[in-house]
Image (tube, rainbow, N blue to C red):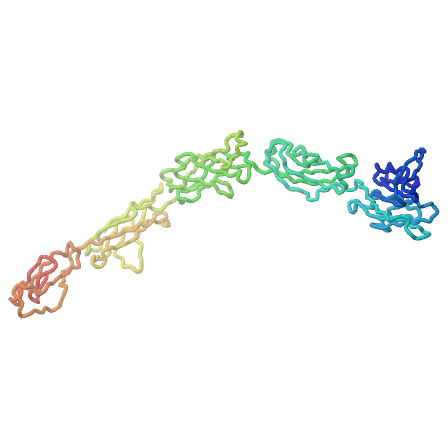
Length: 564
């Protein structure tokens, strides 16, 4: 096949056709055509310079490797791709060129007479990078192929028409505050749809558009690093760093894309707790309950989370003996609680030396000093109008039974513990379901009987005495009083049986025929040592006698008996 030199493509289009004379140059091109003639295999041709070349070729035939066409062509005319030409074509119009394959007839058209190929549409390499086509030369006279069909490729040549993109942005990341310069924070990666194997269209470099001087970025790897020392979260916590990726290796004319990396400084324990002031005061009434909170104190810590956790302590023994302190986990306040009851009349003020210290220390910041602080809390005890206080927790009194009404049983004593020492008045609490046996003098507290008492009926009486302040009767206190009724010998003994006694005729003299017992309701001290005798002292029948055992029983020989 011969090809007219004027039909060859210029190097700008990167699609080359080659003359049979320039066959050797095809070894250095991206496209080549091996042409064949009707002559023998060994044929001598003459170059332009008159030199003779020897070509080893079979009969007619062609082979193309590839043509090139620029993507995104926007000119008014169809883009010229290249030329097909057979050396059997004598230029008389007897040869017809046919193009088939991908895009043939729709994207790529061929002049069937000249063999010129044009692209009629703008192509996008990122959608399709190459097209496989087939070419054939037909003899119009015989309507038969002049040469076998040949396959070739049209490659879409890339231009820089795609800007770098960050498909996953924007990004969120963290880095500890006070991190050393050069600490790795995050790595971004931009993608470029252009051909990475051709030119610099997809060669991306990174830079910081916004976020200096705090952060820097490696232009090649996209690794973001800290660039400033002592970045303090308490001064500024959030940074929005804008990163740019630019292709063409960052050269002028390159396309660029950007993304935002939101960086948050995480907390480290670089701030000790501090009391806002050194001296505090709190008022606590003496009526405050033991185990209940009586005040709060708080040290501030600019850190957060576990780095701001604080432990409070009471340092002086006097304060620690009366009060305790614990940390409220939600508010981080020191909650002061009462260990022992307060008494305004005994001690009116306490001074607590309180310390606050972090529980999670970071040794990297030990050079900043002690992570603790202290303050003084003065607790003033408030006087409360308290109810009267009895001299004893309970009282036990005694009185003899059958004592006359109004007999003094005992006395209770109570006083006003407050400094004003208000007079005290006494009362006995009454119950409707119980009989009243005692009364109390309201001023003296003396308890007296209101009726005769019977030990054998009720040996113990439990009453409750109430004391109130004369100036404030609503303030009351109570004390239990137990009264024991003492025994007197006011009950005669009683024989314990009334059964008849049956004896046999053969009973011997002196034989015990019955044992008789007696009981006494009085106390043992007053009811022991019974003596037994017949009524009137003389037996009604001389055949029976009584033997006194000087105790609780007796041998009985006769029925009629008197016991004293």
